[in-house]
Length: 112
Length: 117
Image 1 (cartoon, rainbow over the protein chains, first blue to last red):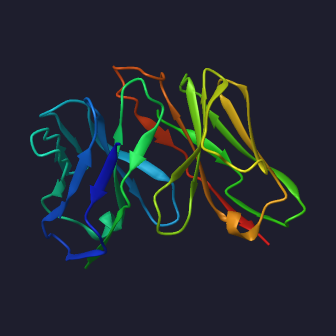
Image 2: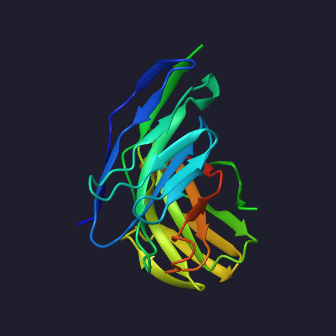
Image 3: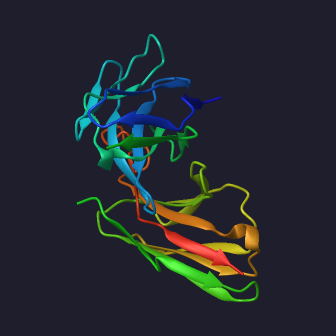
């Protein structure tokens, strides 16, 4: 079946550090891949997405590239800020399917 | 604009109460969803409405009753809940079920924090 695995948190970094949050997936066919972010006390916001292999999604300085050969969609940011502290969810969705599948989430703490 | 609006933001209810959560979107999306999220966990799918018809019920107890009055509105009626039902309830929508152009991107509201006492 379809599944998403992302690195366990919490991840604690200093401001301006480089961020990588790993995400790998198992799926049949050609899924779309997403990163959602949840700030404390809020709902989920779509951060970025990629719908086919080799696509790069980007937003707010975050990037992730859809790698079919390694079944990965790692989230990266070159210089994190305190305001990036949140929980990040990797997710997978299929065309013609109303469901998306979430990873367990990675809590990120950025220290000033 | 990718806005999904949920009310109320916070709700406290007793186990014998009847209450409702409401959700609205004006993006012309044809699929709407209810998710439940417990602390430090990912969202869990409860229901999906596609073109105003219930298409997915993830074996949710009958004390949760969804309703889709029209393509812009989604309600979740609550009755005889248990304290373990306390959670963040998230509404979401997507443009067109099965659309290849959108990649089936799902947009979430801010959620309704429910406490059952």
